[in-house]
Structures are given as C-alpha cells and as structure tokens.
Amino acid sequence: MPLTPRMNRIVEGDALEVLKTMPDESIDLILTDPPYNISQEGKAIYRDIKKYRWKRRTNIGLDFGEWDRKWKNDKEYFDWVALWFKECCRVLKEGAWIYIFFDKQKTGLFDLMLAPANNIKSRCIYVWAKTNPVPSFRKVNWNSATEHIWVGSKGKSKLKNFKHQKYMSNYFLSPNASAYKETEHPTEKPLKLMRHLIEVNSNPGDTIMDIFMGSGTTGVACKELGRNFIGIELSPKYCEIAERRIANTVTEMFV
Image 1: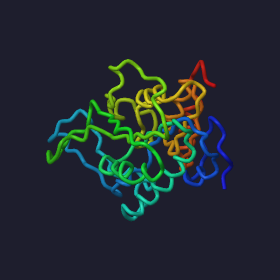
Image 2 (image 1 turned 45 degrees about the vertical axis):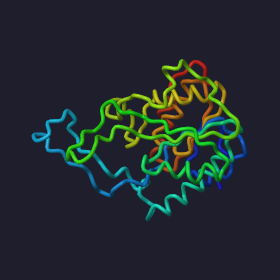
Image 3 (image 1 turned 90 degrees about the vertical axis):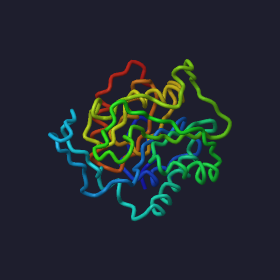
C-alpha cells in the first residue's frame, strides 16, 4: 500500500488504492479528468487533405491509449467510477466542491445515482466550449465542440470567490489542445480553464486534489495560484512529464 500522499507531490499509483490511505475530510477541492472509456483501439479519422482542405494536417486519433479502454463494458466501468467517487466524497471537506470531466453521454451517472448515494449535491454541468472544434468530415452530425464537467458539492456550501457576474456562467470558451498543447498527453486540458475553476473554488493555501493527474495541468495551475496540490497518476511516463512541467512552473506566492 502506498504512503499517505504528501503535499505538492504526484503519487505514482492506482487512484483508488491511494485514496484509501487518505484521511477523512482533508481536501478543499477535487478537480480531475478520469478516463472516459471511449477509446477505439488502433482507430483514427484519416484526412484527405486535397478533398477537405482543412488547415490542420494531422489525422484524428480515436485511441488515447490502453488506460482509456481497459473496461470490457459500461457496467464494469461504472462500477469502477462508483468506487473512486465514493472515496473522493469521503476525503472532501464539508462545504468543498468536486469537478469531474466526463463523457457527456454518461454524466447522468452522477446526478441519478452516485451523488445521492454519497450525500453530494449536484450543482451543474459546466461546459468547456471549444472555439476551434474538429470539423465534422463526414457531415453526419453536429461538430463536437464541447466537453462536459460534472459539478457537485458536499454539505452546505457556496463558491469561495464569486467573480463578476459576466465571468460566472457555467461555460468556458477556449480552443482545443491544438492551440495550447505543451505535452504529449492526448487529453491535456486548458491551463486557463483549470486556473479559473481553482480560483473560484479555493483560497491560497488550500489543498486541491487531482486523482488522474495526466499531464499535470492541475498542479501547474495550483502552483501558479499559491494552492497546494496532491496528484495521483498511474502511468510512470505521465508522472515524469507532469513532475517536470510543474517543476518548471514559476510562482511568487506558492504555499
């Protein structure tokens, strides 16, 4: 069993097993991006540049890696989500919030089942609207221009730092990774979005946890904003990438 995670470190290990070592009500905010279980092994959308004439010249990968397709079916995946969600709710402090990037077709799992079972209040679906979505090459559906973040809170709570009303709608406009990508992680999230969510939901010195640390964006945002963080990441490769990225982040007020 791993040791209880230290502040401002990434623990290499299984999220569920590491969570079990953590004390009750010790975390001020959870912000995480778990596997969606949507990868299609070996598949991609291949572009005929002459036919489509898009500015982007790379194919679109539909396989993010083995870490996003290791469950045999939805039931097996949902059972796994229920386990780590329960542990997340346990370690959250009273009044704390939780943000989970999730497949938009599956977010009802939290509202209908997991949140009520763990005494968590469903708050909203926060939407990341991409200003440069991937075109719909086959023209059979609307462009996929959004990602959804399920939002919940524990006990009686409110946002810690409510900004001006014009900044507090439940959506965030930002380009996709082609405009900001810093690492080779296939699902790296926008730093500006992560900073915004952390600023609104925490204060300097608070402890933010990301149980699927990936490329380390949550840690970078925390370091820039003077928040402490605890990260968990199963992949040694991404642990190394995230640690290096966070180490190179400059801040004037890190606690």
